[in-house]
Image 1 (cartoon, rainbow, N blue to C red):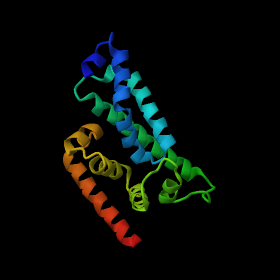
Image 2 (spheres, helix red, strand yellow; image 1 turned 60 degrees about the vertical axis):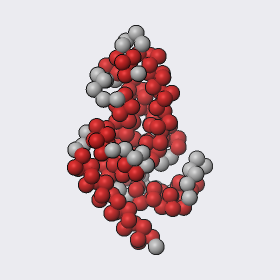
Image 3 (cartoon, rainbow, N blue to C red; image 1 turned 180 degrees about the horizontal axis):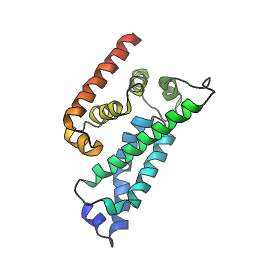
Image 4 (cartoon, rainbow, N blue to C red; image 1 turned 120 degrees about the vertical axis):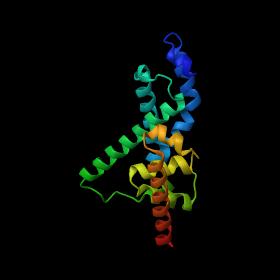
Length: 176
């Protein structure tokens, strides 16, 4: 599919196929970062739009799915930064709920209470640690692939992952 994306005469059809093939995978990568179903759909849609508009910058050096994942994850992280800024500017924090309560109220969330607590613990991690943890734990990606997606060295990713695991473990110890 990467070769077809590079060919301007086949680009549109190949991109449509990529959207069909990778939408669900990207959705779950994004959903674990933004947590909300509607927000995840919006972020994935924005990521595909950004990818379509940036196809000239894709040279086939990496897998198409790796390139798309990088765009989607960066879009999700940008979304979260905007949400944090909006929250900090908001003067009405009475309506704020914990991540666990928000997830349990989400009709698209099908996890149990422990999964909601894990999401709560992950929400307290810095963006990079949370992203590395999610890609490694949920998607079972190798550090080399995460490195290509995030542009971070494998050593730094391993350190971030282990620090994230330690913080999540501490969160669960405090919750008992």
